[in-house]
Length: 640
Image (cartoon, rainbow, N blue to C red; front, side):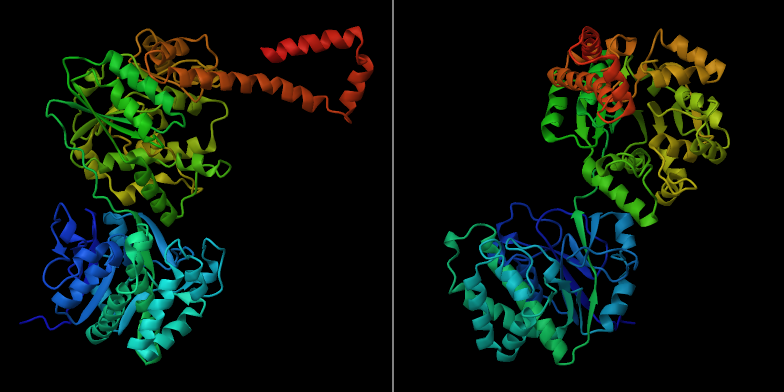
């Protein structure tokens, strides 16, 4: 029995390799194929009757032309590799000023979220209408180089010499009126309104699509003869793509007046469409190590990286996968150059910005709050527990070592890699002495008590500073929904990486030596809390300090105080890195900041108008011997 359903063909214009939804009615078409060095595994706009050679000025319209001339269907459509019509969507998802849904990346989760793989749902909407297109934008809310504009016409003309040339728009409208007088009048009327659809994204019935293309490409062909592109920059030379956007929007307005049934749906815009990054082992004998760094200062990672280079085993191969939030290319190049002399070490990076934004998007969808709402936005983003999702994404690895941020390696990680995991065990890691000390404190945090109830036994809480993970077993018990469900506590706040992994993997840890996470009493906070850890754990910690494998620290600990065992170890490694001068500058900034604190406190306490200022002024008259003596003492105190 033949399929009598209408044939729907939506061309997805692609100019580079991208991850695309798997859907039979979304057909990828490589644009600019005539000039492409590499032909992608999809349809090509230079097959059959085509204008592929004009892609630099026609943009995605070369895919539309190819579809019009070479495809037989009942419904035709056009969208882009990063912009899709969204036929099924949660109403709660907000839109930006352009009436688009901002999404981070195309992956299995986002495709499912926006129904891009749901052919049946798309068919229900398409077959019930003559045209489906994007939601209309209110142009008065949109930026232009010349400020907000009240109409679509003025909005476009405010982009004169930025996107288009105004004289070209006038020429196009004149030609359109000559070729299709009523459509030309309706297009001008539409442009004089406040809304605009645009983006060349739509699905139309065959007869309407043919009508549009007949007029559109005839007008653009005539316009080509009146425009000299030789003096246009790259942006201005995209003129016919922009003009086509105006014509198709005016056409939809025109046929809607004629009685066509038009439905507007949201457009979803993906910031990142790169294919999923995979991490197969470069060498089957190599130890894969995920260096997970979210500290706000990249030079800290340089010290971690150098400590690894110092203690690594030259007879063992290592496959280093580095995740660092905000690490810029120059610093990445520095990290690679530091390992240049080590033939047994390969280095690659996780594309962190796209990855983190993808996680944040998922949290927003679940309405999970940030761990603290008092921090600045940039700091809040670093509170998202990326590590559990990152482990889930390493689909080409069966096992991996994880080295966390703010660490110094003092021994090769080979011994941790050699740990054998038993049945039901997913990760090998040391107990977290710091967290256990917090749990034993006389003022345990409410959140920690809740965490203890979640995991069942807070005394089995493990550190993720250094651990081995069986990724095959991890993927069997973890999925995105489970991870998301474990990220928020009863108050809806997001936990950090270690908390999430302890909730999800409770009962699946193998406890290894405390040497793999050695906390030093490098600041008053730790010095106060660590002795509260269970006696056996604290004793193991003290013993491990004699032979640490991985040293862990907090925030600015290596900078202040300077006379600690941790600081000594940190600066030994720092001197070997190309970032040493940066670290010295940071240390100076920290010292200056700390030096200002006593002076700031003194000024607040003794400011004019306070009773204390009046008393002190009476006891120490200005320019008296007592005044000069106290001033000299305070200046020394502030300098320290």
